[in-house]
Image 1 (tube, rainbow, N blue to C red):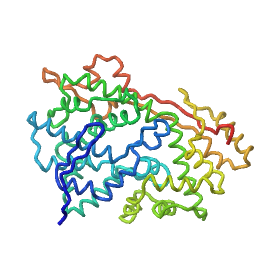
Image 2 (cartoon, rainbow, N blue to C red; image 1 turned 120 degrees about the vertical axis):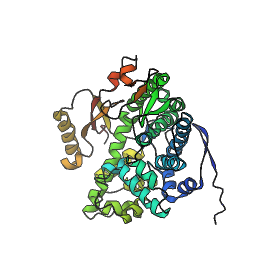
Image 3 (cartoon, one colour; image 1 turned 45 degrees about the horizontal axis):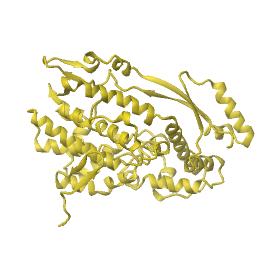
Image 4 (cartoon, rainbow, N blue to C red; image 1 turned 90 degrees about the horizontal axis):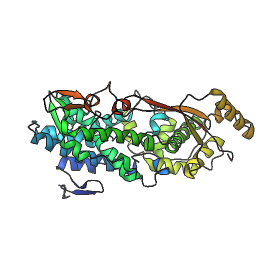
Amino acid sequence: MSTKNKLKIFNDPIYGFITIPNSLIFDLIQHKYFQRLRRISQMGLSYLVYPGAHHTRFHHALGSMHLMQKAVNVLRFKGVALSEDEEIGLLIAILLHDIGHGPFSHAMEHSIVNDISHEEISLRFMEELNTEFNGSLTLAISIFKGEYARKFMCQLISSQLDMDRADYLKRDSFYTGVAEGNINSERLITMLNVVDDALVIEEKGIYSVEKFLVARRFMYWQVYLHKTGLVAEQLLTRVLKRAKELVDKGVNLHCSTALSYFLESETSHQSFTKETLSVFAKLDDYDIVSAMKDWQYHHDFVLSNLCQMIINRDLLKIKLKNKPIDNLALETHCNALVNKHQITKHEADYFVFKGKITNQAYQIKKQKINILLKSGKIKDITKVSDQLNLKALSKPVTKYYICYPKKKL
């Protein structure tokens, strides 16, 4: 029998002490699948813009669980019946909601793993753990999938005001130093209630919701969609795509066994087997960084230059515009690169490309943030807020970008 102390306390820089509520959650945190999150960056390559942004998915998962504990206590205090099993289900679901993230959080989803999202991989991990823990995660899985009968519990995991967002906005703001993103998540949680099996925010919490939505908009423009972070993530995706392309042609690339597995195989929703999951569990940021440190000296022009750009933070130039990028501008940069280095257009496309980004702080057509008025009526936040720009925040804003090499490439 294990003699480990299963009532450990984590000292979190955001919330202070976070307690582990029971031995099952302790054992899940101790599991190698969850410990892997210590080696998965929460914000990808954003540390190239904000040097402090080195926190991990491990930090975020524990913080989200802590906020869920607070939410459960608040709702119980307000007379919402929650059984002990339901509480544990909620805590496990939020603890494991990001367990399926790959290296640097999103890079793999757009390069060497196709047609399967990190949410789907998280579910695969949870199902595997459920077998290992004799069905203890069955309720948590039902909540995570949004299938549980009590709708508000599913909203606590995934909605426009869930415990995931309540943690990552505050946490990412802290580690980046972007003060505009600092929300009062505890205040928001204190204002939670349940009406007709749906989450609502009490009227006195309106200003906290307004601050939350404005902060979300700021964080997307200043951090998550920052142009330098954007081009860095695009380069990382292209590194993995080029590596896979070379391996498919029979080129031998030195890298970890886990990374090699995904470069050599076609991984999609259909082919993501139990064996694939086992290999995926061994893959983290260190595999990618280690590979790039080797590949920067590879004889392939594309792979070596892409890796050098990330390793040395000598990135492509990126320009943001309010209108779609003209194809002529793209062709001009592409032709210049082809002529200068005698490479193919296909190879030049790795360095010259365009795209678009969209920021929508509040998706009014999705699950709404409803306010419980003192009169008992329930209205959408945009209908009761006296902030004129809240309706504007519900409209998507799209910007277009073009990336191309600096002169010295």
